[in-house]
Amino acid sequence: MTTIIIGGVAAGMSVAAKLKRELPQETIIVLEMTDTISYGACGLPYYVSTENPDRSKMNIRSVKQMIDSGIDVRIFHEVKHVDTHNKIVSGINKDESFSLQYDRLVIASGASPIVPKMSSMPVDKVFTLKTLDDGERLKQAYSKAKRIGIIGGGYIGLELVEAAVHLGKEVVVFEKANRLMNAFDPEFSTMVYDELIRNKVEVYTDESFVDIKETDDGLTIITDKREVDVDILVLSLGIRPNTSFLKDSNVELASNGAVLVDTYMKTNIENIYAAGDCSVVTHMITNEQRYLPLGTNANKQGRNAAEIIAGEESPYPYALGSAMIRVCGLEFAKTGLSEQEAKAANINVVTTFVTSHDHPRYYPNATDVHIKLVADASSGVLLGAQLAGEKNAAIRSHAYSVAISAKMTAKMYANIDLGYAPPFATTYDVTQIAAQTIKVK
Image (cartoon, rainbow, N blue to C red; front, side, top):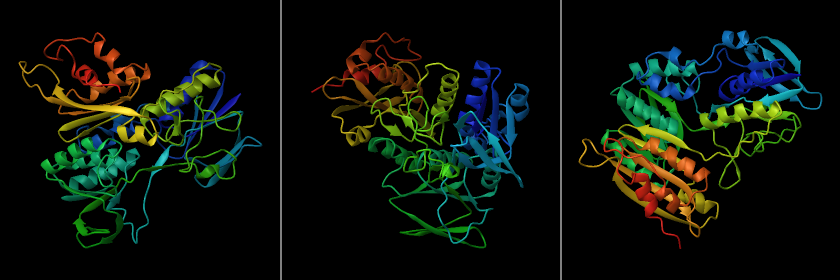
């Protein structure tokens, strides 16, 4: 049997490595359009900031290592078409065409940054961040620039704002929505805004990017409200699934182009699977198919898809959208549903917002942790958590992820036997203190 995998980064290589262990005799071909596979893309902002000065540390496995393990990795192979009737994948290898027959196909083609239409695109002044080469170019640009513009106030945009602040640069950020980091509830967006202002970042929300003008010294960013001069511009407007090659393939896609899959990573076509940033996941609470392009989901989907192909029952119905981010001096984390997401899903909820300490005040360097919980209004079952603080805040979201996955009520969570010692926590951990304040209707 031959399994072809389109894409060689997180999900694709997770499928390949696990499937080879499960089915050693399987012919596994990985088609990657670039020359790089298996790297930690989430580390790129910290390479740009020079907190990690060694690019090689982001490489997980090389092409040679994968080939030596028995996986046929073919770089510079860009897939252009999938013939699902005859089970043929075709495309371009540099200047030559290729056509390959498969028994099973895994679509793990990832996603690419959204780039708006502009009157000009000076490649030495306008950047996106997705690949290792992108990171190298942006690191060099950051080192030379004095004033950096960033379009987009989501996760990647904010991480790159932090990188600029870390390097002592002037930075200005624009966000089309009326607040930053709008995956969280407004209370946390306010904290992000205040933290950026404290670090002398210029922040403009509720502004739409229109165009740029190239100048002798740099660029002028044009929005619907103002013009701002910068040396370089970073576009962080989100990502779009790499699925254009599936046109006319009969593989069903979501409205944004993501491949529709069930909890077994199966598409609507027999023996075709999809995983990672090119596909949807099933949200554990709402049971809806949602686009959650996170490295955590990609790796788990990939591993589980390999097990399913190998004949195991290994669904992935556990996605909660769990995410963490550091913005200058504050940590943020989210798991499950925010209040705004719960209301959009027509779930009747109760919420609480609590501020307490990460450990007792009598032990040195106690700091505040801010927690918002979302729970079902009638049962008290936990549905979501958001946290922020200077330290020891983000990692605490892990416990809430487990509690939500186990369908625990707030009262149950408030009484579970968590550990305690003054350097680490209070007798009731701050996460339990928050849970104690949930009152069902």
